Length: 138
Picture 1 (spheres, helix red, strand yellow):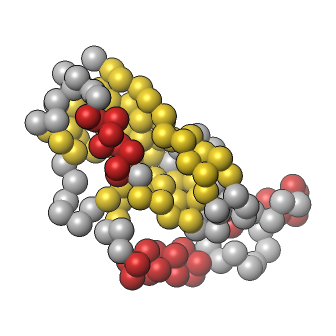
Picture 2 (cartoon, rainbow, N blue to C red):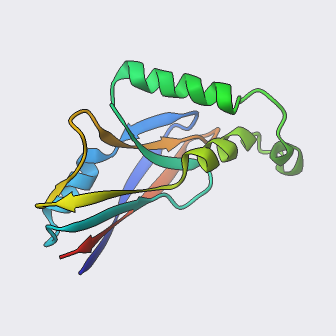
């Protein structure tokens, strides 16, 4: 059996990190699936889904690491071609990836004690986002 739903988000951009675990759990509570796989996917090329301990220090560390890896204040060929100034956001999203799969066991996500699912908006402006959540199993 497969269940597909979406999570709608309004984001601020610039490495806005949003804990979407409660949204996923709400979808799971309505799902008649106990064993399987939960896959989350962000359509678009400037956002990412991952896991992290959703704690202020860890979030700041992640933002700082991403700024060092793909700085927002250096020239990008994408910016030269399109003039939209978000070349850094495309690079960050490509490195972090747009999807995540989490095993579902006994009707529960197999996340660690301090592990939450987060969406990160790397774009350089506010956006309305939709995250696809697909649960596959029985």
